[in-house]
Image (cartoon, rainbow, N blue to C red; front, side):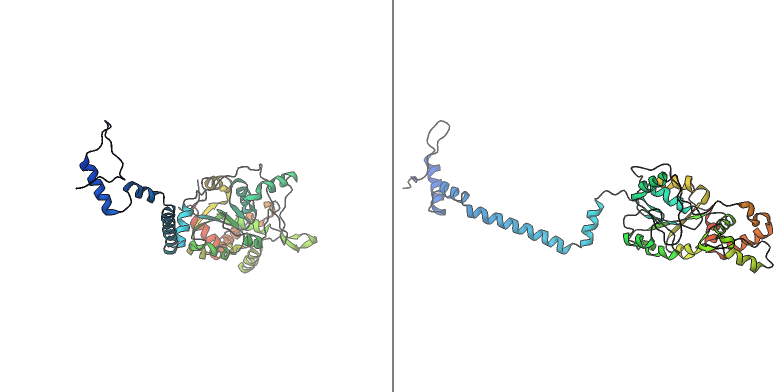
Length: 348
């Protein structure tokens, strides 16, 4: 005859009566087959077992650490970094912009103005990060700012070696006056996988030539000890003599070469509209600076021209010959001739 286990507590119903004998006997029998310990005491023992809980906690941490380690082992690092960087908000445009500063095209003022207006501008004639104070100092000198040649460096004329040491990783707009090969380091997306668009200023050929002739060659003196300036030999006895006088005026025309067309999208803009239309165009692309120093003080590199002393304006035949010579022999003028008025001209 089965007896109720004395270790089992009485189970009472809502009325306070004992549970039926058959239920108690069944529960007791199940408990007696699984463990010698009473049922409730055995459960309580497992719950309170501290070593049991610590073992499971350690196991979970171990599994989690193993999963993280496998992630970094199996997933390429560049994929992780690229996805992380993509989540960071950036105000940089999707491509870089380069200003091919051709001599005597107003590039010194253009570089200075853009650096003063916009962030992340890196130029031989000025950087954004100190453009405000540089222009304030120029204003304090009553605008008497003349950029000399040679080895004189300043915040308005940055040493190219220093520019290279700084690097261009935080630049959106780069302006430089070196020969065209400087730009090759940015060609075809070589620079951190970012493409670059080059902007070339274009000016009337004869006007540009005469501005180059007006440039003083620093360190050289001519008649009466005055700085050397070249003149076109309008009274030359031959075309060779005429063209040789033209060549003496050339200034750094090797800053452009047709090879750039193989490496970049190259755009052009008008010398006459660069301080209006062109800057308006770039204002839709570059980030504006918090503070702008106004008015901008021009950094002069030339004396004012006296066109009445330039014989080419009084000799239509000479002017036509010289213009054709420039177009036939100089890649820079060939590019401007084909670009201006085309879809590659920046005109807003």
